[in-house]
Image (cartoon, rainbow, N blue to C red; front, side, top):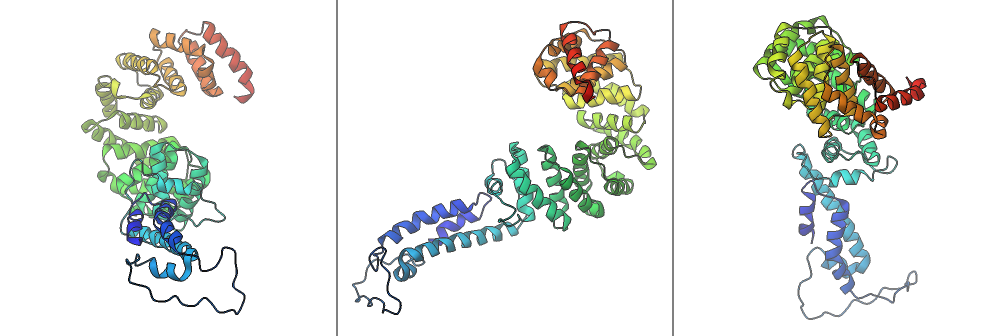
Length: 429
């Protein structure tokens, strides 16, 4: 019987419920087939002799080797014991199978994540490092931000990070997964930063860049981590590709970390981007340069050549970062501004531009004094929607209305409704 259950323990889809169900299917017929040695509910008096041994019987079909002897001696109680042994054996086999190599998270393999959704910090053992990271990554791929699932996972991951039990790849995966799920809370971020800072030398450039971007997206400033990353970047800048450099520099700019040595790297980043550019990396570098008060002619030429010709490759977040960064360093290009506004209209029509991104983009166009009739008309229509206003925090609503005023477009019922709401929100500003 056990060999038929063990395959359940060899893969990522193992659960205790699956083992119990499989064992029950095989054991229950055997347990029921064993005759009771005494009437149901009857007890043998203490000290009384047990039932006489049965007379030898004619040879019969052999019972299953694992179940026969136990069932012959103990009946249903032995069946229950064997069921528990089957679950323990399957769990051991699962652990042994996993220990042979790192997890390879697969889309749809949520059995481990579902098992941890029932974890109780008082009664359940902590997840192993690989299990915690595997479940977090699986949850991130599903977009499952259920706190009942993520809270014990975050505690397990933070504990393993604090004890130095996570590899660089696991630290990277955990940071990215929890940040993607919006569950990168202060305790977890602090534990991860303290684990990464002294171990940056063990990270590959790609692993460090992706982990740092998670901290940048969460706007978590940890001086020791950023200082260690800056030292790593100075020593191994030539090992980073353009995308990795863009992620690291964007994180520095997002967190407000400045280092004189970083300014010298920005020119190298611009040259690398010129060889292999993509919309997200270009937007990241422009935003980082704006945060550091830096501009480079190579980057300006790249923006003019690539962005205007490939504006359709920018999603809402990258488009907003690009235009805000360019406006911050005083870069102004009429052709690029018109292309960016047209792309924003397309994104709005496809419901792919978030309200905060629209506010950021309009603010950038207003700083460059670039009026686009189609974008302004769509903005007015959105302002008349209560759902759109509900999605805008007070500061972003104020920025959007201020941009419309600067563009000479602060009129219409939508603007009036937004202004009235902003007046009610004034204490929150």
